[in-house]
Image (cartoon, rainbow over all chains, first blue to last red; front, top):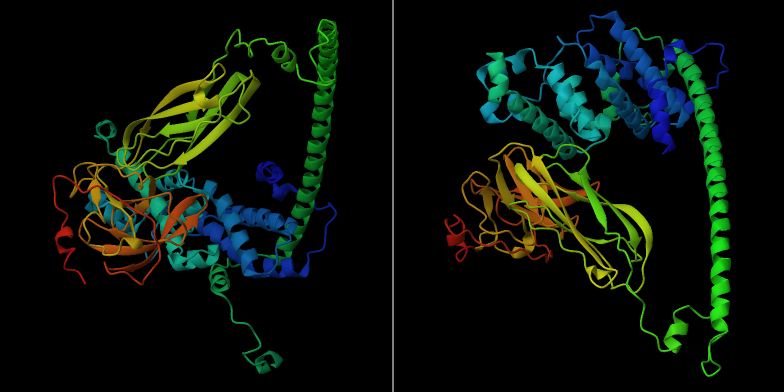
Length: 210
Length: 367
């Protein structure tokens, strides 16, 4: 209960404006090693979600801000330099990264181990869709809508694979999932992608488009 | 150079997650500055946690004081009432004849019983049990959702919450087993309310009506309640997905008649003519095979089941757990059992009346 309340407050915390005059605490050895080993990687992961082309300097600052939040959270929980600690950090970073999928023109290319048929029913795989998804990817808006309707675990997998273009194998390793668990989670995302696309193709929606 | 002399066997090889996160490393990140910012941020966060905790504690103390004060006022009122009752009872005691032996401490019902008076009177005014049904968000095929039943009874006589019987009205899944009603009550109760939650997954899309029957005190007698409430909802999802009923490996020959059936809500290859009481849960979508798998909630984690698809192919799956729901871990493909098992969960699915299953004719010849 307290954790939930804290998470809400923590989400509003602006770590960039924290006063440097505040008293500091020494980082324990295990946590310091975790930070040294994975901070830059977490920044890279978050930035792949928000700006895969790395063209916007502001995306780097935003990614660093999120990484600082995540590692401060990890510091409070005394996470150490273990795979379990890294997994919790990555999960937290992905949870905080979903709002970064906001730019209308942003496209999410599919990772190398996924094809459009893995994500849409056959009747929705028009040549235009296959071409678009195979070349430039799906829109961030479409992905975000689908991710909002799945559970947290599936959202993380969807964000890591479709948002950050990690392979399912890499995603499974980072999130400490078995291969079939990651597949099931991705299937949930695919269900929502299919459902939303199908609902957008209903006659009323098509009338407006035409 | 000294590092080069360290044998490889001493350094632990990097794990897969280490390799992945290392590959994602963003160039140009200032780690020294990051460490400082994390230190500052964690200190600020810890301070906020302390302040939040203190605030919550203070609020709890205030709420406790308010409740305690209200309770004191209530106690005073009850004390006055008790004193009044005592006075009446005392005066009544004086009228009891000496022939009636009454123990010094007794219940009020003992006195009329000893005096040969009739059993407890029925309540003069009944406050019916009411219930409100709700679901947290939109319901879609295969997705677990929770039905919340908020009940309220101004004179709830039973000790426990009302028993619940839910008709989900899924065309392919059996209704949940009815909870047995509790015992008949002999006295009126006090105001009580609560929430009952039940989880379910629908097998097919379309409009459905959930019907909930609540019974307290057995649903009969002067203090019994028996109410039925409905909630219409629209189950979203894709129509036309084949349904596959899993069968436990204890059924033996997978080709035996009645062992495996599948269906489609739009008239697919084969139709489940009747619902089976054993099949009462949606397992999950098998996206690769475009099917929805139905199972029994009586099965347990680790049970091995057979899934047979409309194209006559098979998969064996071992049931696992995924939170409160049930998940399947596929073991191998093919229709032959992977290994002998001792699963004994009974499954009975009525054979379709219109079409002969492609496998049923081979049941007697299978080795």
